[in-house]
Image (cartoon, rainbow, N blue to C red):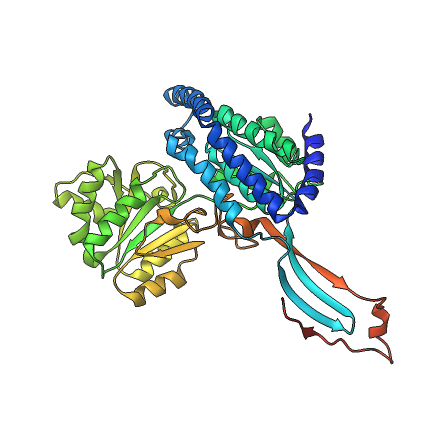
Length: 437
């Protein structure tokens, strides 16, 4: 089937799922969840095929190590796939919620209600769990979806899609979820503005920009995950070091992993020698500004010099840039200048300083005394996420169900004429706000 035909069928399917009842959508998700549990061994086998091929690609220099790590599905991750579906099923249905109601005139009532976006295309790299997360959120929010995963995960993506597709057929919702697999398919998808309402790319900044530059379809995406932690002059070292280690080491290839550490000069000498030594013991390559270099050298620690490019680099690896700053204002300015507006955190015991940071840093997620790794749709209680958006329109941060809906206006009248509200004998609009219940 060619891409235009698929997109057309998917668009029609999106209209069917858009009016499905809450009970039907929840039962659908729960059924997919049980099928994934039943086929967990098969999923693991297909994932092993992808991992073996990916390891060969890494050895040949054709694939990065972070992408290899994102590809792997442990037994716990496979179990998590079912959890995504169950948690999304348990969430309140976002469709059909009244947001606004007004009486324009006697017998002429206006309301605004939530509705699905329509047909969404998700283009992503490596992480096969995206197939399940996006499917769960799309079905619950009443949207159709076309998935395009990285070729390095094709076996895993395919088996997950087949499980989902079988269930959809049983529920007479075929073509609601679709999978395409080639780069040529992506080029064709970008042309389908007649059918596709939104594209959500998950990948590098360059990849997102390519999608934006090559399609008339609206794009919701995030740029690089250049995440910062700023250590304020008033901090508790016993708290600070564990948070930094977690942010860098818990999952280095994730987009919410720590990439740049900013440290107030008043605590640099107390904190950095022990921290750098601990990071190096954990296999992290540290890069530092001139002052950080001098401090490390005086403590018999060998680190590399950070250059300007390091401040705007998403490593997704065991590499960390460190800069000593004179003030919190300098730290905030650095983050707003070099960051990607993804996730940034301050470590401080001073609540006034924390509030300043939380309000002044221009990022989708801003934390206090917390690892940047908490920036995640599942963690936020959204059930799952289709990605993290650094956009400032429609949706920002982890995109859950609320990012998968839009709204429409419904006007109910009784033969009302607009002309009745103009001219010498014009009627007046009441504009009376009505209760939402």
